[in-house]
Image 1 (cartoon, helix red, strand yellow):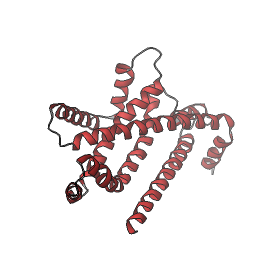
Image 2 (cartoon, rainbow, N blue to C red; image 1 turned 60 degrees about the vertical axis):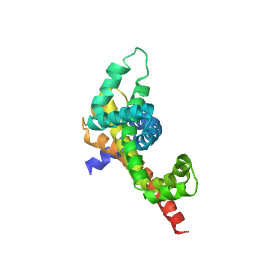
Image 3 (cartoon, rainbow, N blue to C red; image 1 turned 90 degrees about the vertical axis):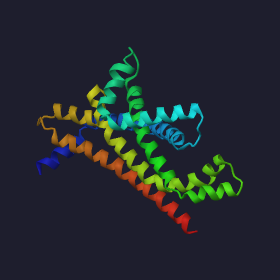
Image 4 (cartoon, rainbow, N blue to C red; image 1 turned 30 degrees about the vertical axis):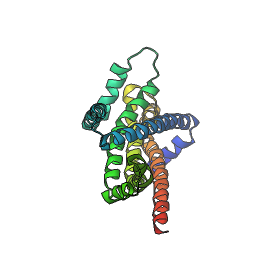
Length: 231
């Protein structure tokens, strides 16, 4: 009973609630900003990777994109964050929040790129051949025929990546940012019982709510797309 009383005590203490909400705000700020960068960057990288162009410029771009996805997916997010904060953007006065958004966005983009690439390649090649047989250009065939079908295959994977991104942002406390996890740590340090369990559980509740809402939205979108297939 004491455990639940302590949790209720945290949620009824205005100072602690303010800390949690402030931390939640930074968590959402980083997550939304990084997701936007990741989706844009991932889409561009995926388009380059599946391009059939043999021009020198495109071949160079493909090489760069493949090196990018290999390095980002093969190294820890915490290490990438440290490099961005203490090396790449080690500029006096540069907003650490923006650095975190860029770091997580670049990381997410590599995974999104592979998800989109896999989704496009999962569409039967006959769809592309049918479009070309109708006289459509490669670009129009991709936009009008392939991509709409690929989106249905990609949405679950993109949703999982967004959920993983939200949870990964909890490491920003390692670079001194005040996110949801950092707020829980502060509450634990200042709590009269000197207990970290209850504030960490409060932070977990917030994470669970965010993930549940995002999962709910993704499932609704999937259901709507499946309904359109039946028509």
